[in-house]
Image: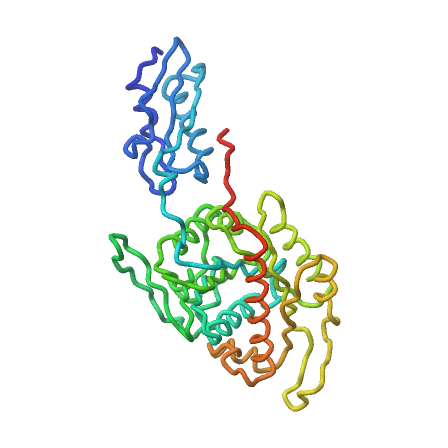
Amino acid sequence: MTLYPNLIKEALSSVRYPGTGKDIISMDMLEDDIRINGNSVSFSLIFDKSTDPFMKSIMKSAEAAIRQKAGDEVQVTVNVKTRQKAVEEKPVLKGVRNTIAIASGKGGVGKSTVAANLAVALAQQGYEVGLLDADIFGPSQPKMFQVEDARPYAENIDGRDLIVPVSQYGVKLLSIGFFVEPGQAVLWRGAMASNALKQLIEEADWGNLDYFLIDLPPGTSDIHLTLVQTLGLTGAVVVSTPQEVALADARKGIDMFRNPKVGVPVLGLIENMAWFTPDELPDKRYYLFGKEGCKRLAQELSVPLLGQIPIVQGICESGDNGKPVALDCDSITGRAFKEAAKALVESTSKRNADMPATQAVKTTDNN
């Protein structure tokens, strides 16, 4: 079959960009540089960013579409260009001073409880605080803040339609849980979950914040990669229990952030469920899951131990009732979160004084 430019365009019009569902021709992604030499064709596709998550799949789809249209013997070369506007984009979250990931190596260690109470404790100390529930597949913050029925709305701000976060206990809050029916499973592939996370970050009116906490899913996933590619994180806090199995996963979490390709400072460890204290015996400590495991790990890895949070019956009840225990500064656990928040502020200030700002991870491989 004889190759000609309109044949190439017709073939490429069947290739759709997953982020919008539109074909790449109508999105002006085909550069005006089609070159045909006998049975070979080359052209360039234009992407807004060099980090576009769909780049490789679109390149492969474009090549397959042309061969389906013109025959398997056609030699196809797909080049990549990025639009100039990608370098002119406004900084993400320009009004936010410190962006901190709250992470855990495994589930079940109380990471979301720690994130919620740290946010409340920081707000009680006079800071402007935002909390993003980035646990796409198991959002729990709406329940913890007693705002499960909230439905955030969009507002036109400076010519952009932005999602307005829900405010509760002095904390600005957004979660994917606000946009799905209670009890509904979120069945999304990695790219869909990542796009949802980016939307909650980039298309929300977070305003000016001293601390923006991001409650990540446990372990490591596409969500973590999307986050470090979207934002230059000030640092990360890793949550663990004193158990050896939890500490092994916490070690992996710390290693992930410290990886040279990621380069996110670890601001510290928080030991949750450090001991059990009965309400009727406030001076007693029962070490149900081991003693000071996080303290030893923090010393070994040279990271601060920000706090040790005890188990009391009230912490579970407060989470279920939507009133974080940090609201009660006189309780045992409330005081522990208050001190942990102060330690986080100190660690963040030291990090900012000693280290340059973290840069978002950039993907440069276009092949």
